[in-house]
Image (cartoon, rainbow, N blue to C red; front, side, top):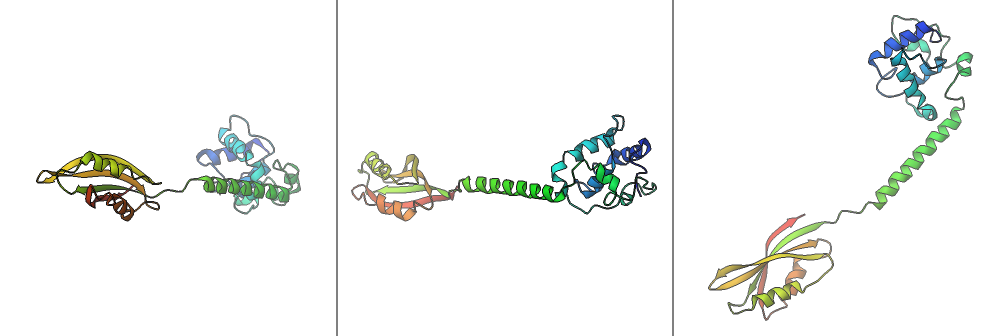
Length: 225
């Protein structure tokens, strides 16, 4: 396996042909395989070798992340077409010439610390955004049936009494009068409540407290929002 001599036009042509249907030397993400081959290429490939040039410019953009790319760097003879022998040198990992043309830089420890710092900053930003995100508030839509004593009850006053009930997490909605028989009408009224702040027991207690107008209160419908 190999690309021939990557410092020659013939070797770059082999690399270009190899990358015609590939984004990376191995797999589907940048890895140490790309770093090894990149370091063996002495300069950007010519424009007519557009597959190799595309790959070269893409891998060069990972300069500061070299140490954090996945995989283990191997000799050049471990990459490339199976029917081509590597003649570039003894391998990207231990060749002195390759060290001289390391376009990424040679301070692995410094780069590793930089990558670690970037990861920690991104993690801190993510945690900060997560902490600022408002928690979801559980709410319910409730339809109440409020029944008067008789057909002489002032239903307008009854509704006024019901709507006078105010609480944090309680919003009154639409209402209508529904006949129940013998000329009597009940008040059917909608409300939206925050489950942690307002319950049906509290609503019933406060509504039935208007005993001059209200005989009883029932929950006609209860739906989580």
